[in-house]
Length: 403
Image 1: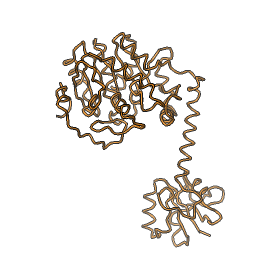
Image 2 (image 1 turned 90 degrees about the horizontal axis):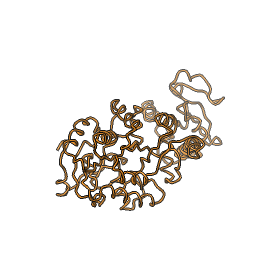
Image 3 (image 1 turned 135 degrees about the vertical axis):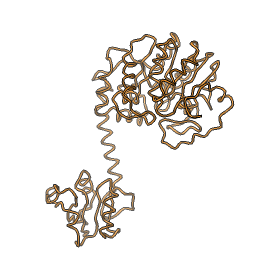
């Protein structure tokens, strides 16, 4: 029978014990550096001991139950414990007869249980048992904009987290002034400005399962409550996912309708794109092909709010009042579209519509890198090198970035 110590009397100790084959194993004790735990018994019978208490003791294995195991593994090595006796529960290693199952199986189970908790938390809103904000579909929004030449300010998780003073998008650090400006936009009652918020409350069955679960994960805890407190339940909002019409949906019907409606907004019109320097909206696809002309103002791809006054001044200097201004600058775009609309311009916060269109054209099933373009929801380290076409270079009328 194996003689075994477990290192770590914390959260995962019970999990590790449940995985040990007790027909082959005897637990001698649980090691923990917390002096308050030492001298007690865990799970009614197993003594909690100090790391020094195993000095000179005979045992077959020492199992590290702590998920951040590196420092404990180093301590074992420095204490002269043979490496073949040390089993790290969370480390990818060949299976060992001490265990009935392996750690990753339990990790998946914990994750699955968390998903069920999040689905249960979301259910009263999805089933309309609890009140949710009134959000009209994206197609209705685009038809309205086409008719009245109004502007669009979108709020997603990044904007709401900025208002809450928390970091969400990697491309914009929290800023109190930006948070206050976003609240100003959210509470605007200007009829020429459409306020869009994400449909994260009901109707999630139209999304792919992983997308719906990602929404539930984000809204879990205090997030839903905090967002609802910011909203007017008597007001009509529009769906901010109008700029994400493809990758998260179960079928392509939504994208089939939304993309032509977007293109109809700038058909035969002068378009000014205000974008991050690596966005390259409309390059490599025909998203903007129906526009009469396209010009661009390149802005910082990260923390654009730091340059907001320069960006606003440059747009006002360069923009034609007859042009449609399309902005993709994260939370900064929401405020910029608002400020331009208040000055009589038509400005649209178009978000990630270009990335979505690329995936739509390619028939992509998941978010993937797009050569030469920055994809906000993909990991860092994307390859952004791209031979800038002559036509693209001609379209750049101002840079608020390093050349």
